[in-house]
Length: 123
Image 1 (cartoon, rainbow, N blue to C red):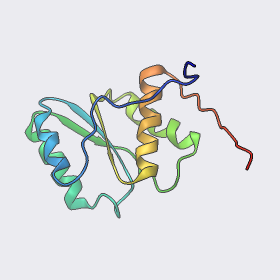
Image 2: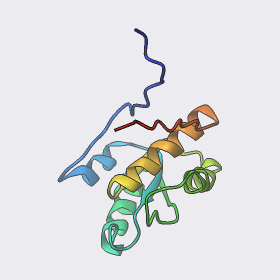
Image 3: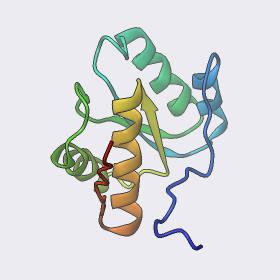
Image 4: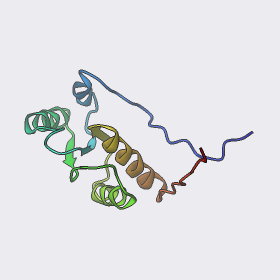
């Protein structure tokens, strides 16, 4: 039976200690950072991220923070913030809500829309 959905997969996922250092390998890239606010992305870490990206000849922008589980309006807002920037790379710094928002924003940026179907099961 064929899948009735389109999988959304990143071409590369880097996680864990040392992940930020990996950004220095992307020479000349425009990086958009989706984050969970100052509790998740302290100023010192944000400055280090900027230093790594700019040190590799790139540019960096930060979205407004994702502070709760995202609604469709949050995903659209974040994708709108980064659309004109034209990033080569999306970086999600935070937990599940931030990562879900980044995946949704990616889908909108690549495909122009984000159709999500809600499935409800009967227990």
